[in-house]
Structures are given as C-alpha cells and as structure tokens.
Amino acid sequence: MKTKLYCLLLVSALLAGLHLASAQTTNLGIAPAGNQTILFWQSSAPNFFLQSTTNLASTNWVNATDAVPVTAFTVSNTAPGRYFRLGVNATLGMALIPASAFILGDQADTNHNGDAAPTAVLVSAFYMDTNPVSYFQWQGVYNWATSHGYGFDNPGAGKAANHPVQTVDWYDTVKWSNARSQQLGLRPVYYTDAGLTQVYTNGDVTPYPDWTASGYRLPTEAEWEKAARGGLNGLRFPWGSTISETQANYFGATASHSYDLGPNGYNATGSFGGTSPATSPVGSFAANAYGLCDMAGNVDAWCWDWYGTPYAGGADPRGPASGTNRVMRGGDWQSGADVARCANRSNALPTTATNRTGFRCVKTP
Image (cartoon, rainbow, N blue to C red):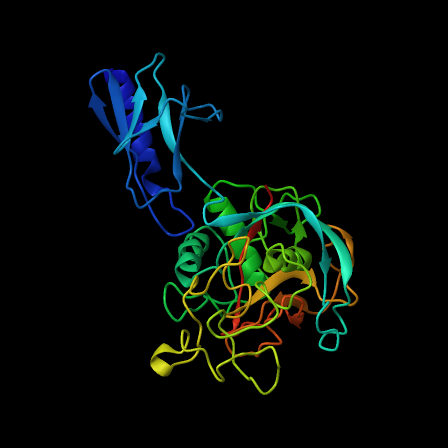
C-alpha cells in the first residue's frame, strides 16, 4: 500500500502545474480509506476526469472506470499499483452541432445581401463554444501562450472578465486557438508548413489547417451560420423573424427595419456605467435551440474563410483559397438589427482589431 500511495503522490506533484483554458489550476490529492483510496481535487474544476496507468513511461493512460464519485473519488486498491492523473474534458462549455444539410444564405431579405444567395450546404458534426470567448478565458490561454513561445499582435481587451474578449485580430484568434489546444494536450489545427509539422505560433501568415486535428479552430462560415440558426431554416434570427433588445445586444433603430422591435439605441444590458464598449456579459440572453448564446449581436465573430462571393455550396465548404478580407459573422453591440441577421456577411482585413470584434472556437469530434 505504501508503494501505491507513493506513486499517486508523485503524480499529484507532477500535476500541480496543469492549467485549464479557463485559467484554473488544480491538484490531485490522495487519502487512504481502509482497503480503498480516495482521490480528490477541487470542486471548482469539474472539467477534469480521472485517468490511470501502470507505467509512467507509457503513453497509455486510460479512464479509471472503477472510480466512484462521492465527496471525492474512491478507487479500489488493485494490483499492480497504478499511477493516476487528471484528464480534461475538452468539450466542456461546448455544444454538439449535429451533421445535416441546410440552406446557407438569405431567404428572408434578399435585398439586404446580394452576396448571400441561398445555397444548399451539407455540414458535418462539430462542437462549438456555447459563448463567445470571454476576457477571462482569453487571459488564461494568452498568459500560458506568451510564456510558451507564442506572439500576438494584440493583448486583447474586455469590459469585464465575464464579457467577451475584443480588440483581437484574425491572426490573434488563430494562434490563440492553437495555444488552447496545446495547453490541453490536443493536436493543434494550424501550421506554417504544408507538411503540418510546424505549429503556427508567431507572425501574420496564412496558416495551413489540419482539418482532422483534435484541437480548437475558428468555424467556417457555413458552420457558423448553421450553428446560429439552431436547426431553424430561412428565418432572420436564431429564434425567429423579429428581434428586440431583450433577445440580443445590438443598436436598436426601429425606424430603419420593420423587424426591429427595439427599443432604440444601445442595449441597456451592455451599457452599464455608460462607458464604451457596450458589450454585455456572455450568456446574458437566451440560447438558441443548439444551446448557443450571442449568435446575434454583442461582438462580431471571426470565421476561417476568406471573403468571396458567391460562396460555395456542397459538403463542408471552407471558402476561397485566397483573398484580402476574412469573414466576420453575427453583428455587434454597435451595429443595427440588419447586421445581426443569421445570413448577414461582414468582412474585414485580418489585421483588424476593434472593440466590436471577438470570436468563438469550434472543435472536430
């Protein structure tokens, strides 16, 4: 028993520096309990799960299926002795968007978007962050990244920790996604070489994506719109065909659009203190049918695609091979109801970083 305890305590020490994307840190503790052993960690870190191996030199870590959750986790003292570590649930805080066909584009207001002609698209299943990346989440990964060789154009900003990060350009979000992946031991998506061996960590370059990688990435434009619609089709917004400031953070202008129910002006949820930017805390408004918040308004969301028109249909389209501007979707706290529509297409130079610009990640299952 002493040998087993020693091994477990060793792993606890090794895990002391493990960080989550949310900037949490936790340790694996141990206590004997008769012919069993109690392993415990802080309850504020629910996205950990218990794994074990019988050989620290091995990469074969398996989930501890005999772990029984109590106030801590109790595992059996089986031979041979085992080492334990905490694995991370990489999809915590994400929603699974099911594979399906849908109509990408504007079916309600074709006069608004000449570049959004309806197109049949088939999108494979993927996970998406339920909220825009918050300033708190950004800082946790950013601090890890800058101490591990990453360089960013902008440090990012946020009105408060629970508000979306903003003032990040496209290159920042791609590198941050790679850092988030590496921090959790996942294979990054973006590389600087066609052989996919050099992880993209610095500079402003067009990266090569490994679409099969397990890590985090920006959504394609088609993925973003499918997720925003929440399984509904042909409607202006994730919930229906009208919008009000009880549903999203945008700039109300009821005289401009019949579907804008206002009230007029900046949304009170984001305007607390009367200071700019008028972002609202992530998750302030009801989620769509997929469980996603802020798919309309708050901050514009960077997408992977180069902007081009018309956009491609078919299976899992990923935009033009080259271009000048990258696509942004979703609208923001300073834009009107028309920009918050599911089909609206915005675009900007990838070096653009404003207090209206944020992002969220997706992940291949």
